[in-house]
Amino acid sequence: MTKRCSVAALTLVLAASTASAGDSDFSLGVEGHSRTEAADVGLPVYAGAVPFEEGGGDRASVTLGAWAGKFGLKVDAMKFRSAAAPERVAGFYAKALGRYGDVLDCRDPAARVKQPKDSDKLSCEGNEPKPGDYEYRVGTAKNFRVVSVRRDGDGTRFDMARVDLRF
Image (cartoon, rainbow, N blue to C red; front, side, top):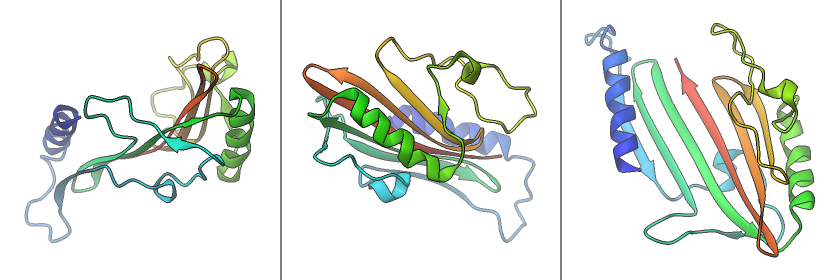
């Protein structure tokens, strides 16, 4: 994750090179930590779910961010495991996401239609879930929440994230 964060920061610095260094509102920074909470993502944790770490230094939650002036990127992400069936977890999150607007079900081919480049409309382009898996999104192309749900043995693995792209 450190390399990705560094690359994102460098990209943002280059993108913001036209910003005025004399501007007192100009700021530059990088953020990264594993203290992410459900409130950062803006979604509740499914009852009985436990944080999931795959090992090898993996974390169950992470926040990564980089910004330069008005340009920036921030991702808050969390991973969990539950004994509940995937259908129950997916239904819970489809409803929870609904408080933010119309929920896209990425299993639906209409949700995966590429949007025009200048559109702020969210899509699931390039993210067709495998059969039996679920992925839901809500928000805009630059500020959205996403939840993916899949069977994991006799239980369910699910990931949730909030992505904020400020350009």
